Length: 78
View 1 (cartoon, one colour):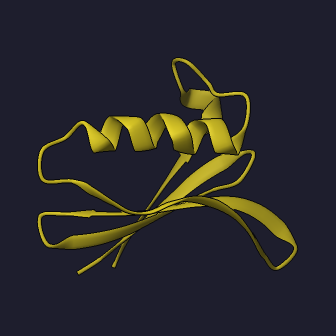
View 2 (view 1 turned 90 degrees about the vertical axis):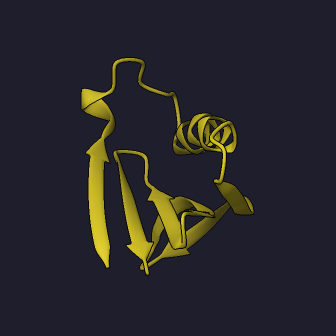
View 3 (view 1 turned 60 degrees about the vertical axis):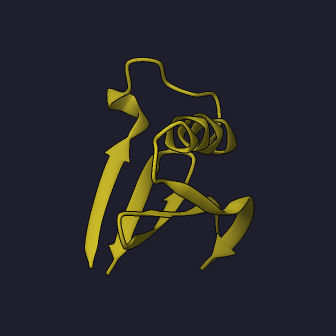
């Protein structure tokens, strides 16, 4: 398992919301040959915190991206 994090503070063009950040990422991923959006973005709550979730895969790896209002967390499962 690989876990990465990205704060919106460091983004060159920061999105206005977590949903917007996930949608921008979803569009970019869907343009890459071999990458697949497995489940469209959806909002969810984990321990009282709201996230936007995106599931995608490619190259034999399955990924989940969770974005809160302040940062993004992405995990890769082999």
